[in-house]
Image (cartoon, rainbow, N blue to C red; front, side, top):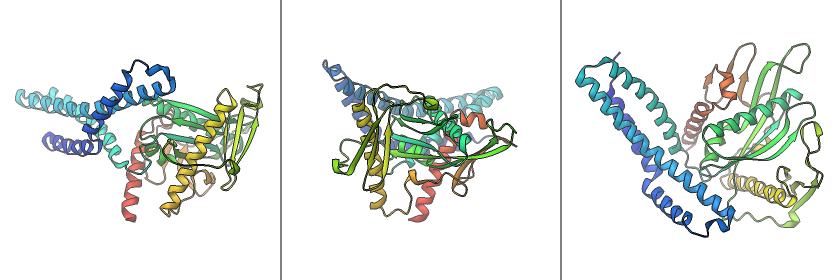
Length: 370
């Protein structure tokens, strides 16, 4: 069946018009201009932290602007290619146009997902925590697999990350890990990943080669910003210090630089040990604690009947995605129904289709509740 290029291109242009409206290119260009002025200040690097924030924000803003305008240019190129193929009656050129159309549709659909991220904190950077659940050493190993999966996903998109805390299990894997994804809309994008993940495989830790089911919980919260006004009185905090440790309890620090911060009224506990000093770990712990309290406050204000992401049981009955490595290969999201057979690719960070499907599913759920 011949491709209706005219209709397909018209649909692409309509979708991009919606993307441009949400992106607001004029506002974005204004942001770029303001950041360029800051970046050109001769004393910019007198404050290294601020300089890095300015240059990173400028790079991200330019990338977002170029992504939208570049997509418009690609549609123009496709239209010109189709016209050439039709005028010359060249089947090879039209086949090339069809291949370009397929890729372009996928890229535009992914860009369109951004227009669905309009929640209060969706544009924030994200803090992700992964905890091993039921399943013993396999669960700890699974937690480490998930951490690698998300870090590889971020790497694929050139999103900077920073590991804040890792608590290693005794035999293998992780009890828990916390890391930041430092990119605009990281919270809105990764928020759909929060919940219980389930792994089914032949356990590499079972000498009888039996199949094992294990679980891990993923929590995603928005990163706190300076104007969020989340003040925590010192009297509400219990702070413990201890020595950082590596895999299998191996000591990696000879000083008490790691920090465990407990918010007494809520019982929320945050541990940080990946910075070099106790002061840095304390600041990082406070920032993550404030972020968790921010999300909790938003949930309470909206009267949302959801548990905090950290309360996920990570066991039978509440999983949102299954990763099956035996007796067949499949990753399936139980909410959206999206599934693929390439488990290795997914665990190597190929998550975009799952994330896009999840964001669309979430928006549909929200509309149904309105």
